[in-house]
Length: 275
Picture (cartoon, rainbow, N blue to C red):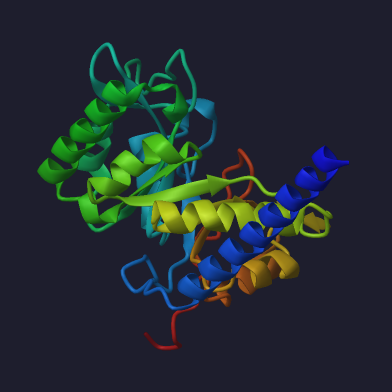
C-alpha cells in the first residue's frame, strides 16, 4: 500500500510539473519577439529547385530556374563530409553528381546566393559527434561569411543537441518536428513537448510536415496549439486553394509544395496589390 501511495504521489507531481511547464512555455512564447524571423510576402520556396529529373535536383541550374520564377528561398539537401571537411549538396549518399562531379555548398552559394534564402536540410546531423558537429559549424561559418549569406541561412535538424551548436553560432535554425496528425489523440501531448523543446532550445522556427490533404498534421487544431510560433512547412499537397490558404496564415513564414516533386507555384505570394 505504501508503495502504491508513493507511486500515486509521484504521478501527481509529474502531472503538475507537466502542466505547469506547459503553461509557463505558452506564456513566454506568447510574448516572444519573432521579428527577426523571415517574414516576407513571398512564402512559397522551392524544394531542390525546378527540375526535370533526379540528376537536376539540388543543382545550380534547377535552383536558379526556381529563383527566376520568383522563389525567394530554396530547401536544399546537404551532408557534412567529415573526411573532406566540407558540405556536399546531395539528398543521399553516395552523393548524386552534378555535371559529373559533387557540388560543394560554397559553390552553390557563389552561383545563386545573392539575395536569396537557404533552408539547409542537414542530412544525418544526429550522427555527428560533438567534435564533428562543432567542426561542421565552423565550416558553415567560414563559407557563409565568404559568400555573405549567413543571415539568410536556416539550418534544419531534428537533433536538439547538435542543432543548438548552430543556434549558438548565430545561425537561424529550424527545429524539425514530427507530431501526430491533427485529429490524433496524442497530438496535443506531442505538440506540447515539441513546444517545450523549441522554447528552451531557443530555435528560430519550427519545421513541420503538412501531412495529407484529408488528414493534415498542420490542421486547425495544431495551428491553434502552436499559437504564434513561426513555422516552415514542407510536403504541402499540390493544391492551389491550399497554397492560397497557407499564404494568409501569419505564423507560416515559408513553405514548399509537393513531396519529391518539381512544382511551380513560385509566382504566388501574399504581397499587397501593386507592390
